[in-house]
Length: 429
Image (tube, rainbow, N blue to C red; front, side, top):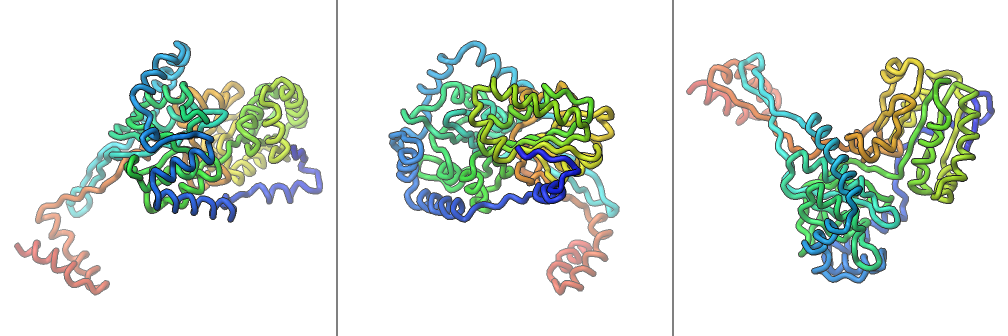
């Protein structure tokens, strides 16, 4: 890991490098463009070929869709503990989602015109769920589950199959429980392309949600315009900002919990407490030795992990807002004071006992969050992203006449005679 104190010569330069703007690599951009073009040109045949190439799975076009027999087999196969865990998580997700759904409203402006907004769920959305060696069962709940709470009619899931052409049983069960009306064995950039453009088997969706690797993220970026997207979430990351009240054992555990996601995960600690700074280093060494995914976590720590001893808690929070972390763990004596200073984090976990893992699996808010500095521009996935918005305007002749003078003047300024006349005719009726 990069370990620096504010007194070190390289400290200012390292802080400057922390400011990030995610840019795709040329190689990834070109590869994804070719994959999308293949799906657009060859449809289902391209999906079958990519499944063989990337997943080692021999599928047919008819086998892309998970059938009812496969769903029923997953329902029978999962353990009682899995059913209970999925149910508990979905209950919290639905409760949280309903609180954040936007609601219709109306009012009258100064001229007496009734104005308002109307919100309806999208008709058909796509949710992408990473699979592979660590199938993200919870991600299916925190994407499809939000769509379910928002009242989306058609929830279309895409996820990569295993080499035998099947899906992870627990993942399939979770998607089924979260209301997925269609589930397809199509991962990677080609899965995103299929959801966005459609094929003979897969009808296109209106909006695409969900995290993924660099190819999935780039595919979502390139599909903007063909569909809407939620955000561009990349590799997992966490930043801990704590003062002397932080418990080193807990905070080191949070760092390792994110590091074990993958070698591209990014984890960091900023603290003005020398004691905590040193204790976390010791805890990381001890806990890492007991981590089954030690090799993966080690690569992440070595590649992009950092521990910084700052001048003050104020400087720590300035670093937080520059870095815009996906997850922020905030532990301080005056929690609310410092919480008010946070501007850019995707999700904030306040206090020593607020484990990020509880947010990942159970608490209710979605764990699909902005990464790589995009928290300056994007928020995490939320229920109102599954809603369409339309403004509503209603007026009687009295309100129209009160609006007439200003509208006719704008029409004259902009040289749009028919605009003004459309008001004048109504006012003179």
